[in-house]
Amino acid sequence: MMGLVQELQRRTPLGWLQLSHQKSRLLVALAGIAFADVLIFMQLGFQNALYDSNTRLNRAFLGDIILISPQSRNMQNLATFSRRRLLQASDVPGVKSATPLYVGLITWKNPQTRRKTTVQAIGFNPEQPALNIAGVNSQLDKIKLPETFLFDRGARGEYQQVFQQIDAGQVVTTEVDRRTITIGGLCEVPQLS
Image (cartoon, rainbow, N blue to C red):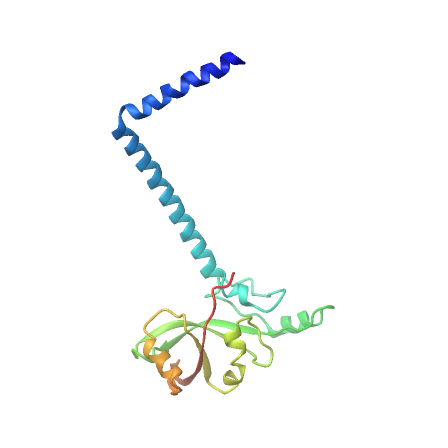
């Protein structure tokens, strides 16, 4: 046992001498390791951001079971299914309610720039809230009005002027598929975790 300890003590200085003999090589090796670590942490950050942004809406649904069409590809490209399936689901014992939720991409004119762009729209019966988002649920009375929408304050794009107008109590209208709509209020879809 004593010989093993002496052997380890003898080897350690040799390893240190090898590292410290050429300091430039040691620094280059340490820099390479540090760079690889930074890349790994960046990739993990990108992965988490991608996952969070793609599951943000899904985590806001009020429901235990969500039915979607098998032809659906993703949340931006959903296919519809017969309303009969929703009625069948509501007849299953233990099901409290079955509520339709409409999710799709719409083309609208940005009220600030007047350019057409595509945004995701979510529709549901305001009498049966479908999302666990306080900013939406506190303004359900506004979306009961025809052709009235809530707009996400966190939306990407040039909307600062629109936000200021709505905050000032002004009416903001725009076009969606050649129909005039009113932005009745702003909501903030939180970073859900």
